[in-house]
Length: 294
Picture 1 (cartoon, rainbow, N blue to C red):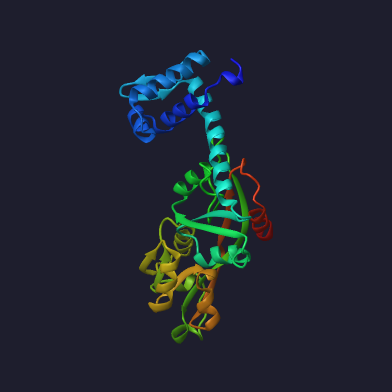
Picture 2: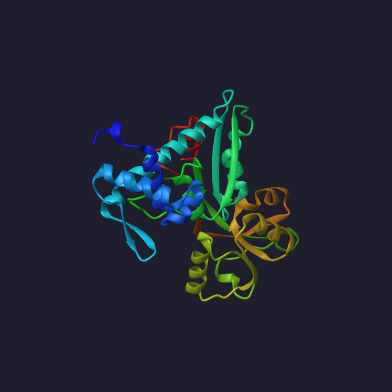
């Protein structure tokens, strides 16, 4: 079969069914009938000369050929989505940059990273936050240009991603200046029995902190665990408890003297990464941001 004989409309219907794994849901999404979707896929199979699906109970399973065709369809329609996203952002010379950030990442860090663009009138920013997996799905579908994260993503040959290290920051123990300004603590050795606030279990730092305390045979008194860094900042500022966090989270409070660092973890660092897709169209302002922090 020649390329000009390939019906990309049929391929699009196949792509949606393959991603959803269900004819009825695909038909609803495409606003058409299940029989129409089935007919489109049968015509594609006839053209290719091989079946793309095998039915197992009420679900459709991809054949080996179906897996291969899906891999190419992901690239074809993913790049189409990327093209539309780029064209929608290119209005009157404007560049639209779509940035996703994991919910456990400091908003101060995110703002510091995009700060060079805040005074650039030619750039329109779209900023989203969420769980890493959901953001990666949107990245792969070219609905985001970059995901900022504090952890890497596992290698997956079926979903290749570029993960660029942006830098790291030491983690500190901070407390209100009125109580802790004249004190210094060894961490984690001096934390036994002290009231502490920690990043939540989903945060990349939490398991490392727990392991350090276990090795040192110390048991701090947990008063709160917080996933969202903006909320962690507020609790650090207002609670009076000691808080374990990267200093960038409370950079303003440290600068004004409302909070002080009473100890620093030599073995704990938060690392920052920019995750992109390998087929991403070159966005000059994004390349400049990544290069400037590498």
